[in-house]
Each structure stands twice: as C-alpha cells, then as structure tokens.
Length: 84
Image (cartoon, rainbow, N blue to C red; front, side, top):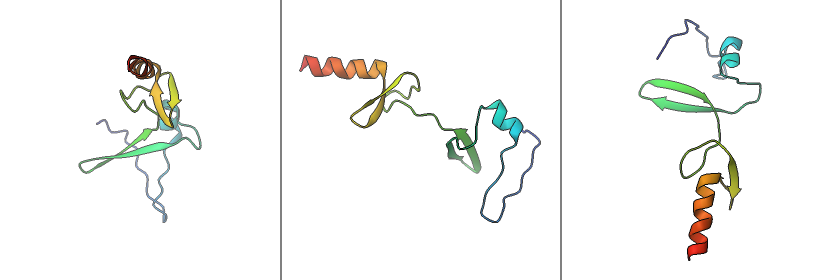
C-alpha cells in the first residue's frame, strides 16, 4: 500500500472526507457508491462497480431474473436452457 501523506480526522458521526485530488484521480463523484472492505487491520475504500454474479466482470451487464450477468455468461445461460 502506498501512503498519500494525507491525514483526515473522523467527525462526531464517524465520517471522513476524501480529498478532491483522490476523488478526481479515481473518478469518484458526489453521491457515488463506495464499497468498504477490511483486510486485516486495514480499511479499504473502493468505488462501487456492479459485477456479473458468475464471473465478476463489470462490462456489458444485463439484468437476468433480478441479477446482473455479463453478456458472455448470459449467452452460456441461454445455451444451457436451449440444450435442455
């Protein structure tokens, strides 16, 4: 992990401000969803990107029975249905 040298304090509600330089660098806009991960004693923030439930791809997603599926996996599902 690379240090940015930026230090922020939590406010009384537990919030922290992500500096504009970092938001610009990672293309994070106001109201964008952010995922929170824990890795040992580290807290990791990541811009949320929806993924295919099967392969994890975030490209060309379609909704299938209420779930997000990429075109490749959707094609495989469709082929399975026609083979049965």
